[in-house]
Picture 1 (cartoon, helix red, strand yellow):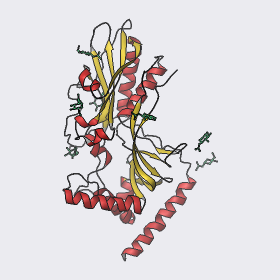
Picture 2: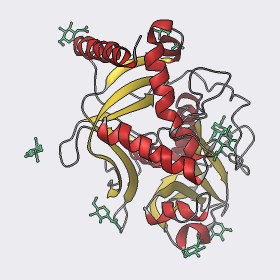
Picture 3: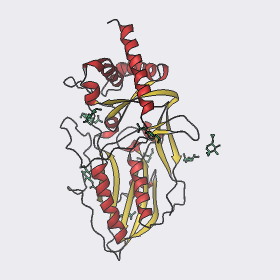
Picture 4: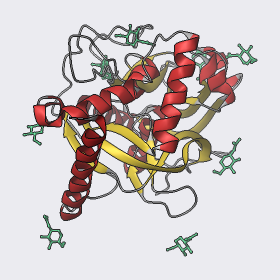
Length: 330
Ligand SMILES: *[C@@H]1O[C@H](CO)[C@@H](O)[C@H](O)[C@H]1NC(C)=O
Ligand SMILES: *[C@@H]1O[C@H](CO)[C@@H](O)[C@H](O)[C@H]1NC(C)=O
Ligand SMILES: *[C@@H]1O[C@H](CO)[C@@H](O)[C@H](O)[C@H]1NC(C)=O
Ligand SMILES: *[C@@H]1O[C@H](CO)[C@@H](O)[C@H](O)[C@H]1NC(C)=O
Ligand SMILES: *[C@@H]1O[C@H](CO)[C@@H](O)[C@H](O)[C@H]1NC(C)=O
Ligand SMILES: *[C@@H]1O[C@H](CO)[C@@H](O)[C@H](O)[C@H]1NC(C)=O
Ligand SMILES: *[C@@H]1O[C@H](CO)[C@@H](O)[C@H](O)[C@H]1NC(C)=O
Ligand SMILES: *[C@@H]1O[C@H](CO)[C@@H](O)[C@H](O)[C@H]1NC(C)=O
């Protein structure tokens, strides 16, 4: 088949998907999928920095006495100092966590949620020669460990006490964290909106360190805690802007069917531009190609709940914002 005909077939098929989607009652944002348990990590995924090196091996959280008073801290720091050079810090890409300290024992603890194999691996997959489907190392998880490194958080970021809770409230929160950690297994970098500005429809919500912190605050609030901060509580959001997303299918639906070979190849080509370990020259070429696909052809293949969607992209396409999300109140 000539290339132009392949393209026609492909677009006819995408139009068909659009129509098929209209008959489904899709709720937005698409709910983040929960699992019964966390699967074993594939040995192909290798962390550059080990996940949770000082946490308990079995992810246990100590039990507090109900008579104890536990102080809760909001922790935030720019990402630049660990992991990525200073670009991310300048873009206001922040890492968020929650701290706890016990009045009775004086012990303190840090709790955070992050990628098992670093941010890049959660944002773009690997194209392996031995597998047709792109391969994702996108697990994220909670890490609870002894100590709060005051200097690390306070010097360029935030370390602020925002609440006090009882030992029982802490123990209930700990159980919730363990359940949340078992059922919410993968990291999602992007938030996808219908447009920039107010009243946009959210198509997909991110699932990252700051979302974990918000969930934790909401749970504490439900358990009866009062949270308050003297300053604005801002968080980093990484947005994509698109028209209504079109559902494409999961790995076996797309990459296991000869009939969808064109779509499968197009998805691989798309992610090939974002592959890791490129030389400077390759990277420049890839970014040009990515610009053509995302901005000129207005197309982005998005992965959520281990399924692919096509985003009909819109200006301003991509944006990083550091914006306020107030603490919950009860
Ligand atoms: C979609 O929602 C409408 C109204 O709520 C309902 O009548 C219809 O049966 C639903 N369709 C499907 C496919 O679920
Ligand atoms: C990403 O995954 C690859 C393959 O598993 C691994 O080599 C690498 O260390 C991971 N992290 C980064 C930052 O690339
Ligand atoms: C969350 O899951 C990860 C991955 O299995 C594990 O290493 C970690 O200890 C767990 N965290 C908690 C707080 O249970
Ligand atoms: C946490 O404990 C360490 C060691 O005792 C102490 O230096 C630090 O100030 C404590 N931080 C908070 C926020 O309680
Ligand atoms: C704070 O920022 C300065 C200047 O960018 C940097 O040199 C320093 O390492 C940072 N401190 C911490 C604790 O991250
Ligand atoms: C956003 O929605 C609110 C409430 O429905 C409405 O009052 C407001 O005018 C809308 N703003 C814009 C810019 O559409
Ligand atoms: C993939 O999608 C197909 C059809 O949509 C479904 O039957 C299958 O169970 C899905 N596979 C997985 C692993 O979710
Ligand atoms: C925090 O967010 C608010 C509103 O979202 C914004 O106006 C403000 O500039 C942000 N603060 C910083 C330091 O970026």
